[in-house]
Length: 250
Image (spheres, one colour):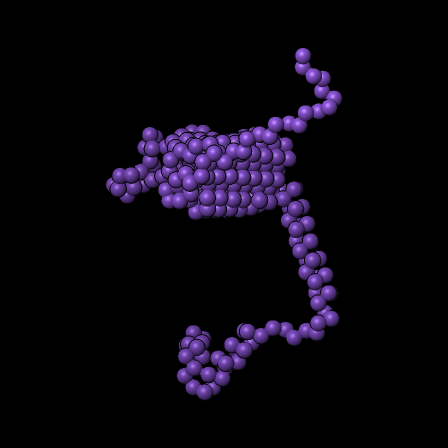
């Protein structure tokens, strides 16, 4: 069969070239349907989409969220989980109120410490394909937005010494440094946040950045390694308009 397919791809004879030409036409063609079928097909599409989302919600509500809740050390109110997280290791997971996990997340822990901690605060949104490598502690404070493809790592996962890596030894304890993300921070797509980093309150990390140093509050940082490009993004609070019912101060 493999030899026959190779002859068709090469078009060694007019017969095989004809088969290849016909296959290409079929591959690039589409089913001929009259235009008056479009409303019906659109209805079928919407029905299929609605049914798929509904079944996914039912599975998440009755199976995924309860199982994940049972694995966590504590979970607040109104947790939403669309896919069952993959957890490997002994990490203790603490989750606050109103946390949304919109896609796949992975949590990995090594053998250095008995109870590494992953702490996720209130009103945190996690996108798809987010990975936590937690061997000591990773903390996400309240009101944080995490886009898809983000990696949080409190260790390099391997020792620096080459011979120790060959021997499959874990990193030294002093090479494991906690990670903390301040409240109201926004972490962009495909960002890597490395060990020992603290992201300040309200900071924004641009897409594809690698953060190896602390980022001050209320600034924008991006690049590899990430550097501050905009400072003082916090807008001053507007003074409230005086109310006519308020009594005058003497």
